[in-house]
Length: 412
Image (cartoon, rainbow, N blue to C red; front, side, top):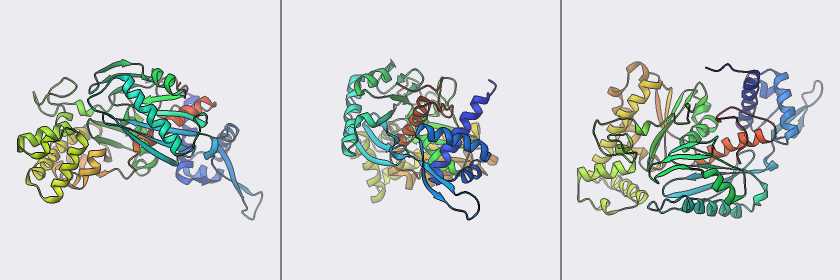
């Protein structure tokens, strides 16, 4: 383990103050000190840096009746804009944020899940980015960074999509392609890292320091936060829980292995399970994944027995695989998220809570809670904008190690 330096500690303190601003919105130096546990002197030094960089502004002067008035501080939303981009196999969704991470508009562009060339995906991202800027009446020159989440294995420090199984991508230098196409600073990462950061800063992480984030959709993955810090692993692959073994010599997974969790609880897995339950079910004639999940939801509402059995089996698969995850990292809280959870969570989550009992150690379950994410549907975009904000701070001389890989230098 590398020894932590004074620079590391200072970077962590900067990010603690920044996170405090997102929680408190406006605060004096004394309130920031109380919230972060840092000394007033340390906070004052960091605030001076933020003010110099134009990241923080003085909102008002507050009189206490004793001594000099106190400065009420806030992040300066007009310092620039951030664009968070959630790229999945079936869509590109972009949200533009001001520097206080308030959303200003969202645009979604559909992708044909059967087309997968890098240029096709880049074209979709460009349409979505320029579309959301036009919607919010923001000039491209005012954007300080674009954070792009891509499915599969991503190395943010190199800007490379190492492997995207559904697209058959291998070592695509996606950041360079996007930077050339957009003409903006670009940062790329994996969606589970983005979701975990969003939960840490704005969601369950405000109450829990040890989290497992589980995303269900076309793909399946997880993100971990231990002791309040994002876990990346050596090559940014920590959390590839969707490609751990659930059934020995089971269904063929998109990654080429057999029996992976994703092959049973991803949308393709749901389709395969329904085919086992009722091979002639009308929903199996639906080839697009989101309409298929919509049909599952409609069937549950109407009491379709095949759909009820589908969700029961899926909950059993999910609970068994979550039990392994809980036994490995012993989290305090599991957050279920993703568009499958948004549609099926009301039925799925209660069943998972019930079925996980025999799958995990009793002492781990005693301290565990499971819930759906309380964040908005643009969680990935929010997390990517947060990560991109860290890179922006590095660019203006406020480097941060929190959540980043490599040297922490600005993307682009």
